[in-house]
Image (cartoon, rainbow, N blue to C red):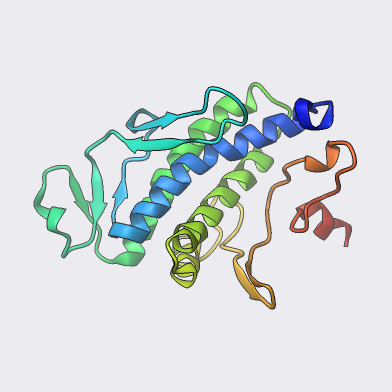
Length: 204
């Protein structure tokens, strides 16, 4: 941000890193659900991330290290000792939500102690990351509608401490969603609130 804008507001930098981090467990869980109808362990100890040596810390690669898996009753892995069998897709969605929320809770506790963002903002960002990644997992693989369906399945309502159900909705321009958290990009020189910023909705 300093290289692009000449400054890097602390709140904006912290919010960017927050979003990048939360998308790691969210996208791993969303992608496994979309591709395999499985949910891996999302404990921080069971995920490995490779970051670039320069520039933005967008993950270049993510690996699941743990063997624990949740799956459906007809999955070939159901008889493995590390498998947890969910009754149906709705129950499997609940496993993903619970595992992601447990990871996010550790992040919220740690991040709250070092930055200016409140607990409500951090949980709103965690909700955004999960909703986005469920949608994107389908979009990235050419079946956006299936990703939207997964977002609706996993976030069918507001499961506290997550702050809302899925907000992905159809518009004339395609699928969009209403963000729950602010990225604080508007604090950068000559920038405004993003189109989906909750600050705009509150102002309206």
